[in-house]
Length: 174
Image (tube, rainbow, N blue to C red; front, side):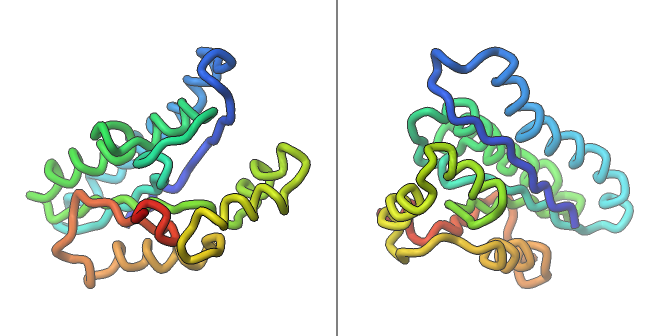
């Protein structure tokens, strides 16, 4: 099992995003996934099975303002970026018995999330605004994502590849 779980978020408008900002987001959110998959492949091919799980984002499916680089890197609606890697590798690696899927979380209460949501100085108000947009009316917890990843790592998902699982409290179902 390879769990590609990395993210670098950037909250800037198009006009404020520098080329260096863009490159950093793409290097962490995409190039890292590519390199990990590339170098795990020989070992996975030897075993004739495996599972690669990537962390995407609900924002790669719906998008939002002031997050162009991040949304692009996690993108899905145009079949590029993390979801695109999943679709392509899901097909390319299937003959070797290797499954590739992506978990797309929404706001999940992690240290990085807390830091990002605190940038305005009012964490509670930002979280309340976000939670109000989720049908389940709560933030995701790390364990919620862990269950989804464990499912894709298990044989219970042995007939699933090239797909994404929204773990978003119903946000994208609206």
